[in-house]
Length: 115
Image (tube, rainbow, N blue to C red; front, side, top):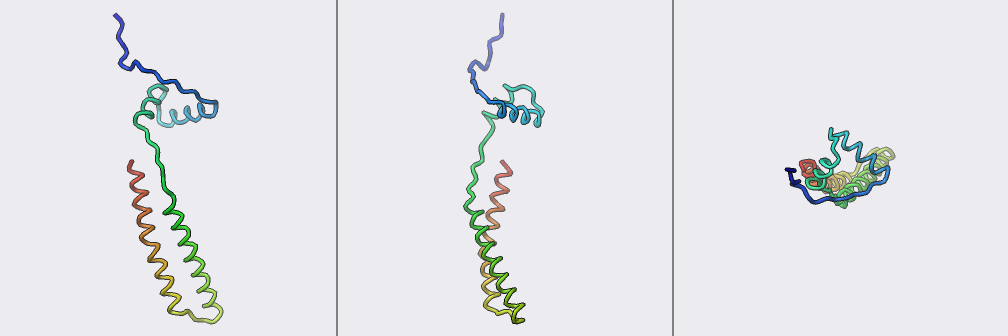
């Protein structure tokens, strides 16, 4: 008497040479030699991370602004030997705007790493 398969549905996937090579490398990296087992695990338990990079773009923009302003203050300090209090206050305000964005980016990175 033959044992009936518990998995009686099939799924065919076609790969080109490059994709097949990538698959083989990934299987080797995790120590799996059975393609069907690897594919089933990835199809059922794998996930795709879709990251919104807009907050990172804002961080980059603010960092560039701060960098430019620091350079201007430094240039003025070198030229006349003084730094204006208003310039320092403006720089501190820019840094304070950057802090919560950095904290949020950090929290999001940690959250993504835990999945």
